[in-house]
Image (tube, rainbow, N blue to C red; front, side):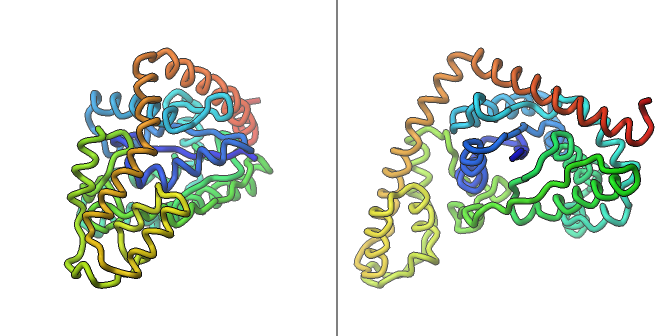
Length: 321
């Protein structure tokens, strides 16, 4: 099955990015044909300075490889390295109903909050549709909040097929698991927007300090606590083994502990998981040719697939004889 997903390079990856999405992308590469791209064109709607964007793109590529994305199993590339997607974007734009785009949540949300929304944000779902249809994608793993954009893609593909004949593969969404709602240091969903993130590749000492400063409630030590409603336990559960998880769960239900003890356990188990990833990332930074080769090979394969799809689309709508 052809699986496709894009990741915006708007900052360094945090625990929410990894456990909410990237971990599941990596699992899907095992038995599927995975296409994973760094969405630098999409990032232009929010990152308006060249130097930071270049840095974010490079960091995203290094981080994905360090986290386990395997170029021998999956195709990793930059969105902008496949110019065919821009032509397909325009072709889809010519048949995109205005009302369909006006109903998209991301645009409506910014309008409602009084934030300036430009044409790039308004037509963002069409470029996303081009990304998906460009590679004959069958499965698109997304969070619940992105499912509407997959429906837009399906609508646009069906409309084109109805007008010009069967041309596009109709993709299906794969809604990511509830781990997409990884809590941040303040208990809200972990997000750069809330400044409550814990980074996948943060310095170990700095990360430990941030963990020890995680906000908690003021219930007395002797009181029993519900682990399922506690964000500190939820964070611990991301890294813990089943045995460790059950041990701490029993501690919560019994009471007689301080949150500082849980924070120390969280810092220890997280560090045990993250340290090998930090070492792998350091090796990639020391040998940038590995990253360059992966992106070059990925772009080459992506363009080969994209060229075939675009020729099919051009012929269907009359752009090519």
